[in-house]
Amino acid sequence: MSTRLVAIDATRGIALLGMIAVHSLYESTANGSPTWTFAVFGGRAAAGFAVLAGVGIAFMTGRARVKRCDALPTASMLAVRALAVTAIGLALGYADASFGAVILPYYGVMFLLAVPLVFLPTPVVAALGAAIAVGMPALSHVWLAHLPVANLDNPTVSDLVHQPLTLLTELSVNGEYPALPWMAYLCAGIVVGRLSLRSVKVAAAMLTAGVTMAVGSSVVSSLLLTRFGGLTHIWTAMPGSILTSAETAEMLALGGDGTVPVSTWWWLAVDAPHTSTPVDLIGTTGTAIGVLGLLLLLGHLTGKWARRVLTAVLSPLAAAGSMTLTLYVAHIVFINSDYDQYDATTGYLLQLVAALLIGLAWRATAGRGPLEALVTALATRAKRLATRAPSPAAA
Image 1 (spheres, rainbow, N blue to C red):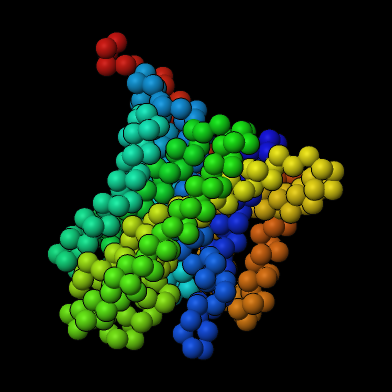
Image 2: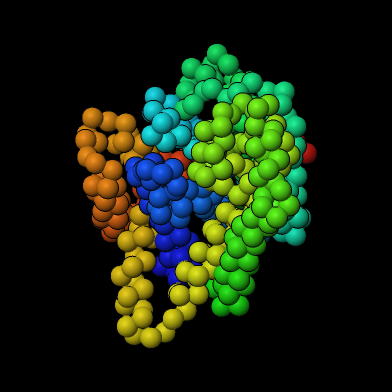
């Protein structure tokens, strides 16, 4: 396997283990501050998944702008993949959202919204991603004032049947992983996936850009909230917010559930997990790009011992990262089952070891993960049927 694919799968594996950590370990200490695991992975793991989903879309579409003659097969492939991922996510709707919100239905909406993107030139996708990261949080801030509070937690098939508009609104605007602002991640991933990822210069540029975005967004947020009085405005507006004083402090420290209150525009300056603010979107995008750039750079090491160490570390991560859909579903099922009787640390370590070992064993024997194989088979079948369909001109 090429070092490029190993780096991508390993980055995906890190995101998987990070999300398991967020779901399985404690978010905060006794004094209310984030634990080190939540400080590292909170918000960043899920964002990493989304950016890498965009990279995957770029690879599925030939890492280039899709030609008009391939429009129907490509759209069919992505749409069926979106529906399949959504169906799997809705099947997990029974899961307790207090353990972890299921991200898959949101991904389904994002995959559908990504269909038009694959027909656009790369610079346009990049510009659109930047516009979404900056503008969509502001637009959502306006919409949220006219929308009821999201209450579906983990959506189910029943929600799709009985309240489809409410479900679509929550998946798109005010849910845990709102698809519209999160399209910034997919745009970034599509752009990255179209780059010459075998190039050392490209990898170095990705690492530099990622660090700049991650650090820069944090610095900008800190300046806006402290030196320019953003925190004072947030606390002054707190009586008109849907949050109590304790809930406001918790959101500032640990993040939100996909959105921020609309009591003041200064909330958009908050850089906290799952707040979908401009600084949150830009910073977490930067983290994902930076990690991938670092692993791509490491893949160019030529020293004998460096290569051995790198292979030993990245191989299990890449194996797990090659079947994240299967392992993610297994994780959600496990933490909602009677088998999870362990304390937080033990339970996480068991899942970490299981994910790495299962990934290695499955890749060495069966290859692609079972759910990955199912989704790919359905998407490929749809693409073939659409390819054989007569064109409107020939009909």
